[in-house]
Every structure is written in C-alpha cells, then in structure tokens.
Length: 410
Image (cartoon, rainbow, N blue to C red; front, side, top):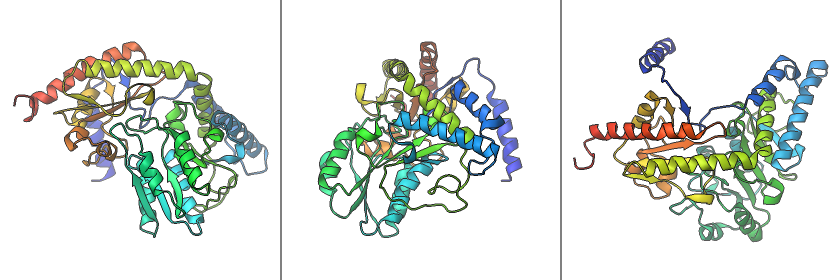
C-alpha cells in the first residue's frame, strides 16, 4: 500500500472514531504527556540556547554546549553519578543496545551474557544477536510475580560471564527487583562481571542512586519521566570499556556519533529534576491512583487477573490486568471510543499477534496474556479520571464478552 493511501485510511478511521467528550491517557509506557516546564526548556533551546552545534566554536555553539553542560549537571544530580559518566542517545532502546553490544565489542575473553526472562526487547534482541555471533546467552527464570530467581542467577555466574542485565523495574508488570541484592550477589562471585540496569522504568518511580547500587551501566529514557521523546542516556561507570555501535562524525561524546538532541536533552533534564524534586508527592499520588484503578476494575469486573505483584513491590504507576474472554486489542479499541487510551501488552509487541513474553514468563496462559491491558498512572491524573475509566472498562468488557463464543455460559 502506498503511503498516501495509508494516510487517507487513517484520516477516515479518525473521522469515524469521533471525538470523545472526555479523554484519559493511560498509555505512558509507550509515549505520552510532558511536563509544561520541560516544553518550556525545549522551546528556549530551539529558539536560541540549543540551536547551535555544541562542538562548534562560535557563540551559538558555545550556547548549545552550555545548555548541554547544565542539563548534564542536572541529570547527574538526579541519577547520583558523575556528569562525565553520562552518554546521550536518542532513546532508552539505543542506550540498552549501546550498553550490551558496546560491552560485548570491547570484551576480550568473556562470552557469556545473563539476562532475566522478562527484560525489555531492547535488551533481549541485542543479546540474541550476540548469541548468533558466538556469545552464550542465559535467561534467568522468574516467579509468578516476576522476581528473578537468585538461586538460578547464582548457579550461572562464572569466570566466563561478561554481563548480567536485569531491570530494577519491569516495564510491563511493575515488579521492583532487589537490585542491591542482585549486584552484591554478582560482585561477590566475581567483581569483574559487569552489571547493567535497564532503569528506564525505575527512574523517578523508585529511589535510585547509581553510585550506591554498585552497577556498572544503566539506561534511561526521557519520555518515561514525562520529558520529550528523542532523548535517552547511558550511565557508564568510570573504568568500564565500551566500543561504539554506530559510527560517524562525533560531537561532544565518543560513544554515540552525531549531534546531540540539545532541546530534547534540556527537556529531559528538566523533567528528571521535577520528578526528583517532587518524588514523594508524585509517587504517592501515582500509587494511590494505581490502587484505585486496580481495585475498581478487579472488584467490579469478574474474570480479571492482576499481573505482577501487589503493594510496595510494584512500581507506583503500573497497572496490568488480564480480562478473560476478551481480546486485548479489541479492548483498546472499545476504550478508545470512550476516550480512554491504554495498550494491549507491551509497546513493542502491540501490533504482533504473539502474546507478551513477560506474561508467558510469569506463567500466564496464552489466552490470559492475549487479554492483558497495560496502564500507567502519572502525576497528571486525578481521582475523577480514574473514576471515569472504571465504568468504561465495565462497558467495554461486557460488549466484547457478549460477542465472544467463549463467553461465560456460552
């Protein structure tokens, strides 16, 4: 199909969809709302302070470099690391790829990579690519709440191990791992083993001090802290050797070629600073709304399952519920018609018919995984928003089940 034809189809779809009276956006896993202050920082950078190339020695270049420098100071403060330990990418996906592939390219002898069974696909896919190049990749199993098996991890650690990559917070089911215990286990076995954290969903949601964790690498994404898309970062502890994975003209950093997205970085730093400054306020609000949403859905709609742990071992923003006898994509459409925007499964698999690898890893059945809906509360949401969403789910589930040949009693 030609792109112009697709454009006409999308326009027709939007017209038939209509404009709902109220909208509630719960799809921040994929993309979403941005702090107004972050937009202001971006606008200032686009209009002047970040329009130049930060490695060029004229006034506009120096202004851009100053914006980059100040943003990096702010981010390093929020991350609890040194400014020179931050390398910018354009997304968390790029940061994960640089961490895993860049470390492997620099490796001289060790050829074993350990990840958990529920890592983001931007960790899984680079690891699997390296497996085709002679590396051994081991996936550590998790329990029904998504917690990585410490016994299985301990059994796999050896002198061949180059890297252990486990996310502090799972992006789909919100499981908060005991990262301090994981790092201690790895380093006590062999201090030369590198530990990478995909911290995209942890940053701003749980306390995270990079120096205190003892991790060697950590990935971050701007849009996960309500900054703009187009900015990511990789923390690389001093002394860790990585090789570039893309090549071209360098700007101010040696590991990621091309000009830095200065306006996006300025917005990223502003958003990250806001999340840290208001950490207790925002996380308590998100957790309260999370629990209100979970209780409202599971207490009102039968045949629903909460995926992941409940309570403090779940990140404050995450809601993942399986609706039995409902297809997840059908639910997203029904909810969209009512102005509620959610996603089915993870962002990376939503247009693929295969069920989420995360839900299968925690022993959900295929039909349970296919009926999963992922939502995330934010500092922007209100109780009124949540109270609007719950009856919308009741209506959507009833409609879909009424048409299902597998509905209860059918």
